[in-house]
Image 1 (spheres, protein in one colour):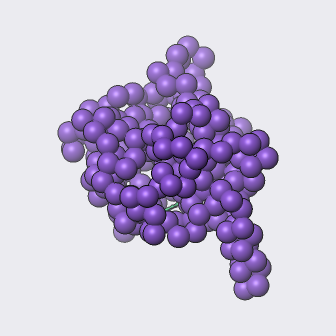
Image 2: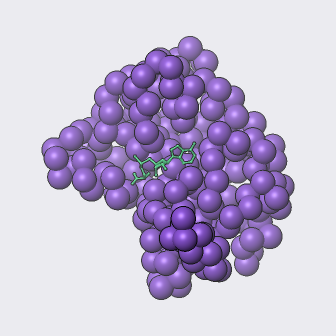
Length: 214
Ligand SMILES: C[S@@+](CC[C@H](N)C(=O)[O-])C[C@H]1O[C@@H](n2cnc3c(N)ncnc32)[C@H](O)[C@@H]1O
């Protein structure tokens, strides 16, 4: 119990960590030095992907969101040590994204190696499920993008079906991100996440797709 409380205080004490995201709806830009297009990584884990995204795109502001603050603490520290000022790590739940973001507040979303929730009774928690796409459409600007990477072929196929059913055309679809002959349509798709490094070491194939909302 004590350890958990200490962790919360440690997380909250970092200047780039946010613990009350519902209070920031419509005001996220105030968390940054300059207002810039706002990108969000959902289920960011250790947030190393978001750190690199922020480093590569200083003209964006980047949020990493996860329910596990102990994991994000790692990325938050890494960003501070590297002097990356356009990243914030947010302790929060994607299930209430619509209560965190005003309509059209985001320019882009990355969903990186989300938990696949393979059981049917947990399907509504999948971050690429139908209800989430409806939320993404609302919180993104017109022309906003959603990018998705996974090592799970079943989740990837299921997501393609969900997108087809919703009439959402694909911007990119890559069925083996690290295939030698592949020229990735988006170089950011090759930024490795912490889980991805593990899955690649096991020889798993990495899948990627992207969607643009008009
Ligand atoms: C398999 S891990 C992947 C972490 C990271 N994206 C990576 O690739 O290293 C899935 C992450 O999603 C987070 N997660 C699951 N459901 C979530 C939700 N509803 N809101 C926010 N984060 C969630 C988990 O806590 C976990 O850190």
